[in-house]
Amino acid sequence: MRPHNLKIASCIAAAFLVSLNGLSGMCATLYGGVNHSDFLAPVDPVQPAAQQNPVQQTAPLTVDPTLGASRSRAATVDNPAIEWFPIPSWMAGKWSKKGDITQSVTDLRTGITTPMNEFIEDYMTVTWGYQKDSQGNVWHANLVPSERLGESQGKNVSFLIVNLRILEATPQNLATRTHYVVRETIGRELSDIFQQESLTHYQLVGSNDRMDAISSNRVFSYQGQPKRDGKLISHYTKSTNFEPLQSKQGIDLATSLNDYLRTHNMAALAKQVSAVTPPANGNSFGNGNSFGNDSSFGNSNSFGNGMAGGNPNWNGNPNGGGNPNWSGNGSSNQNFNNRSFQQTLQRPAQQSPVRQTPVQQIDPNNPF
Image (cartoon, rainbow, N blue to C red; front, side):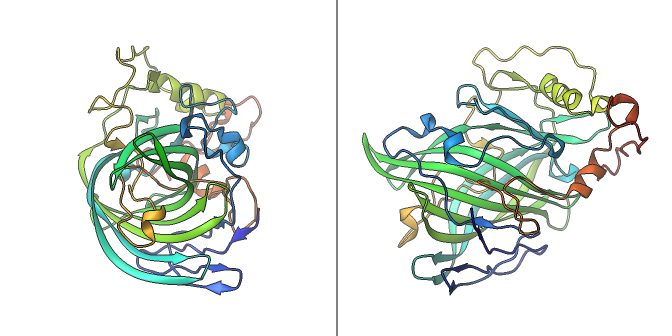
């Protein structure tokens, strides 16, 4: 897969650098150096999104376990893989936004960029952080694949996340990449199906109760051909601080995190926990719906066909993912800042049958 040149640097206000077939557009900066995919594997336009095979849609779904995630190739919506990764302590809690600002849209077939600066009303609540380890580090979990349903301009929308990667984790920032398949229907008739890849940078702004999410979103046809890029910014306000979530979709999260830590050479970070009985309905969101308004992803805007001449807003949930390619090494695997991550999760040597060199214990007051 050839990387598409998109540079993302550490600042909030900036512009995109987009080049495709010699055509240039606006440029924007998010965080670090990262590339959009030039194309994606095709998906079946007839098969429902929830039945699409994520292994066929993107690169192999295995991840270097030292980077905070593990998954199975056999994962499905009914039996998803759970991915754990640490997040900045300030990010842990519940956040809300009133809408998103669409800053610009670039047609990749013509190279024409249209400045927009349009506010789209879109209320959403976002929860980050599910469990703490024994040193006080906050961990978040994603279930992949997962599906959400929404409505947009009289259409029903099915939104399937098939791949999510953490690109960067520091005390001030988190960057993600997500690949998903979107199906829009009117009644029983299929209106559109397309794929989307989003690169999202979350950053603390001022005090601990304000967060900005800046995202670059690339829309692909269902065949995997690039169509347009869009830039969004969303302003979040924290409504509640971190509270541990005991279960999600029937998964005991405390036990799951402990299992992850013990199987990835971080047993000293595991906590002593008792078994948690999942809710009878199999979900644990406050609104009683596993895929309701309380989401662990940022903006809810999609750049589907509606973007060409109108309102891009819908009630889905795109943020970050796809087939990651860091520009620094051209790898098709996830490669985020190892130094930041290793500082976050120093591994005690006495717990490791492999690594015997003593290393520093995590400082719970400064985990990064």
